[in-house]
Every structure is written in C-alpha cells, then in structure tokens.
Image (cartoon, rainbow, N blue to C red):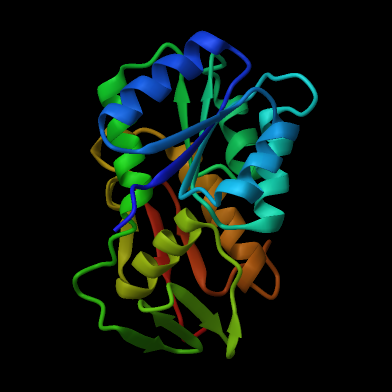
Length: 228
C-alpha cells in the first residue's frame, strides 16, 4: 500500500518547509508548488490523494485552483488561509474546498483534518449497495446515482448525501450533521452545512429554491425525503 500523496500549494517557503517536514514525518508523500499554475502541473504528474492550498498566491489564487481542480477531479481539498471570516470560508467551500483552516494553526489540528479528509469511511449501517427511492449508493465504487445517472459529487458532498440517505425521513440537527461529516470540532460551523446543502440541492432538486428532497427544518436542521 503506497503512502498517501499530498500536494501542498503555498507561496511562502517556510510554510511548505514545515508542512513537508511534519507531514513527511507521518509517512505522507508530500510535494509542493508555489502557485496555482505550477500546482496544476504537479497535480497531473503526482495524482495526489489530497491537496492543501493557500488562498492568496500569485498567478492563480487558491479559489481559482479549487475551481480548476474540481473540473478534473473530486480529490479532497483543504484550504489554509489567514482570512478567518465566514465570507472567506463560504467562498472557499463554494469553489470546491472540503475544509478550511485559519492560519496560524496547530499541526495536530491539521493532521487530524488530513486524516479525516483521507479517511472516507462509509457509515457502518450501509450495505455495500443501498437503494432508497431513486437514489443508489455503491460503496465499492464510492458513487451515488440518481434516476440511474451518476451524481458528480465532491468527497464531502458524497459523505453528506450518503449520511442523509442512510438517515432518511429523520430530522437531523445541524450539530448532528456537522459532527457526523466534519467531526466534533465543527459543531458551530453552520456555514459549512449551508454551502454543501445548497450544492446538493443544485444537483438533485428539480427546483433548488423549492426543494423536494432535502427539506429545511427551521432553526433545527434538515430532513431528507427520498420518496418526494
């Protein structure tokens, strides 16, 4: 089993040095790029299992890189940025990022986020193939089909929709969903849910502004109705 390959994209050499050393010490195969353009070249050569990128870079910003990577792949993307405001997080998640860490950060936190992004563990309750309404989840291929068509999902979109399908018809609180998909340190990050639920609605709802499948329970959370 090969070491997991991680592409680190940052124009600050000291950051890439620290990440190379720390991630390498945990047996990850780490490559670095100083901007988005060279990162795309490295991506094609490396075929990474995970991308960690800064937002503010020359040539191509981290947001642009996320969008370009999403055209090519569903590789997990973690954004690192000094910008901690909600707007910046939402922009990154909208661009295709799976996670967002504010600088400065602790290495233990980053390593935990890396493990979570790479884990992709399916719910224990799901069989290898599960069919609910017009949805079909295949754990072997890590795909979800809707009306027999493959849904093009990012890793976190897949995790979230799988969880909703596995718990269909139940009212799921914001805290429950955030803990299940992102972990216990994310229980207050409701903007994550807002972005990813919005993205899923665009992919499965006939009219995203009037959802039939992913229903909002005001002030509580969401409920998934696969038989709508």
